[in-house]
Length: 328
Image 1 (cartoon, rainbow, N blue to C red):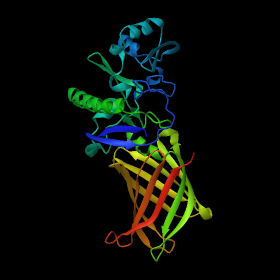
Image 2: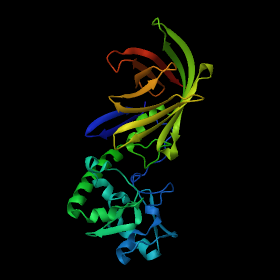
Image 3: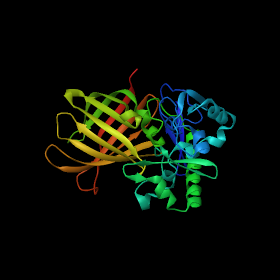
């Protein structure tokens, strides 16, 4: 069984999951680059220093460095970079410098990797920094309204912590390299699963039925979508995406040909995934349900649901159980 070790909030979290076929991962895989590994949208990192201008490089002048491809205006700039890459590499991997200084309580946004506009830049003490500039927000202007030295110190602390996580992390196939690292917490679900579902009846006994559960990365690798095909034509789909601001998974379930839909929130902790949501029975009775994925292994996992009809005063445990085995 393959294992991901992910350091989150200073706690070592062991994520057991099947990763599938992996692409070769470069040392700087988590820096700002496109799917062809072109860094910072192809802008010439040397031109910033020489001309104090954002100039787009040319495909004819490319230097590969630790898995990233840097484009330059001419051969001279390419040679300057090749002679001393560390001098010209953008700070914080080319991501928005201001994004690493955000305070969740003050701004509503958690510090994260936010895409930068290479045309919005500043050179500070010989280091190139890039900034987000879109949807009416100029991150460079916000940066310049603050204490620059304090902001750099704060951003460097976050970046160092993030690098510690990224260096120990293997990005699963299908997951976008720019997605929050926590997206891999549910990678164990990726694939196709043969399921035995047990539904609790009124007398406490269970009715067994079979189902197919399959999951895959969607939305360009930033989210996970899974589909449930139960016996009797019952089927539905769930979209799952990790929200760095709430540090929770946000999920939406929709049942086919039905008005049934649930908004769920969850967290991965202690090797299990837990989630809760409010729902309504076909008869119109409201309930709250808590679910968990557990016994997670490469080829199998278990799933259980408890339900309350009195706002948590009493719970009916194991109203539904699922044993999933990976389909070969």
